[in-house]
Image 1 (cartoon, helix red, strand yellow):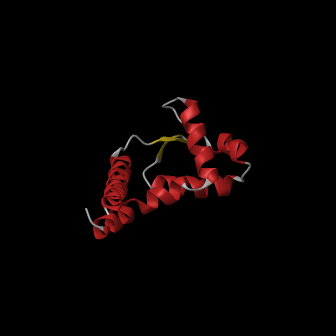
Image 2: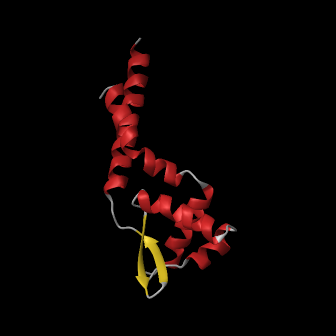
Image 3: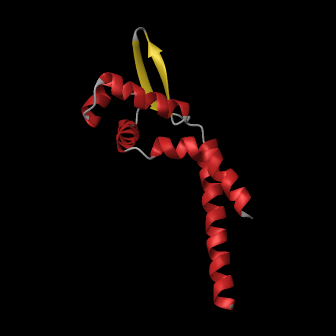
Length: 114
């Protein structure tokens, strides 16, 4: 494991990390988790949780959708948002954290040997 690999790992998950890094998007994710429904949640339900306008919530949902965290289905003119079940990005985050942990532990071991 070297720093170039770590840099590549960060690059692969940067959109996912950016999507998770915003408090309003975190509130949306938590609300979707709380719903526990595969049916999904409408934007109007998310405006209450986030104290944002419909267009602002839609903007955050687009970022979450682009990061494969959220998806939606339509029923007539209504869209229902739910958490995506794609685990690929989470796997990449796990790999990144494993590599960071490895390098930190290696550095700690190398430091104590000196």
